[in-house]
Amino acid sequence: MRMTRRALLAAALAAPALAGTAAAQAPAAAPAQQAPGYYRFKVGGFTVTTVYDGYNRRQVQGLVRNAPVEQVQAVLSESFLPTATYDGPYTVTFIDTGRQLIAFDTGTGGQMAPTAGLLPANMAAAGLDPAKVDLVVITHCHQDHIHGLTTRDGAAFFANAEVAVPKAEWAWWSDPTNESRSPQGQRVNFANVARRFAPYRDRLRRYAPGAELAPGLRAVAAPGHTPGHSLVHVADGGAQLMLLADTTHRPELFVRRPGLHSLFDFDAEMAEQTRRRVLDQVATDRVQVIGYHFPFPAVGHIAREPEGYRYIANAWS
Image (cartoon, rainbow, N blue to C red; front, side, top):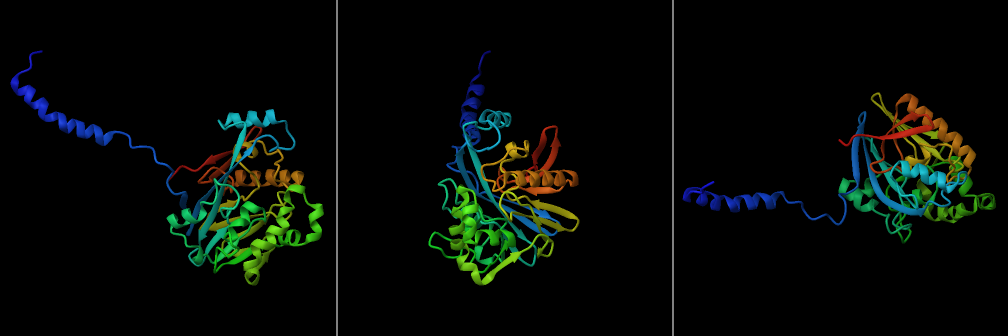
């Protein structure tokens, strides 16, 4: 092909524009961190926001008490997860009912693992002010759920909030005579409960199973993971949501195989019974769920499978 003088001139003039377009379309450098971890959606007229607090990495060995590690690793591998280590995410839920701003559990307070403690920054990104939280509902008193009640120096993080805790949970962990009857790894909870709830002593509410925590929010007994472990059922405008707390840890393992017993369960047999009952209920009723240890944003549904259940994350919207 013979290039004319006019064609050569046109090509020369077009080259800078093409180079600029290519530069504009070139991939940007990878960010050092992800976008702020919060996700917002509606349940009826309620605004629900899940906020990521980070994760803690543990060894798979010893995670499950009633199955060989090879079996556990096989189930993890089926979900394309690592088989030597296990990341447990933490997600705190906030519900704005229009009357109250309510938090459900409080995260790690940045006092458990270097990969956790993101709650304050992610709350700020989501426009959630801890001073404007009216009520904090505790589902149970494990460290990763109550550390965030206080700052490192022991001050109340939710400065103006009432705190609600299950009656059975409070009765167990606030009584030192129960320490010798608790699993060795959970005895740290006795001193920790006294410390974390101290700034809230004059605004502490103890709730029973079935109690109305606020209009549209009802406590559901789910013992086993701890003596007073509780769920929260949310209903408004015909829509429903169940906060599963620690009924199940990561769904790729304990939803798919609900008979596996977690290292973290106080009474493993009772925890399994509760897990099967709750998973059956939310699958049958097609109730949307939030799992405290589910992959962020931790919102989805539970479906039945031949050997257990499956977690189906909501489509991002």
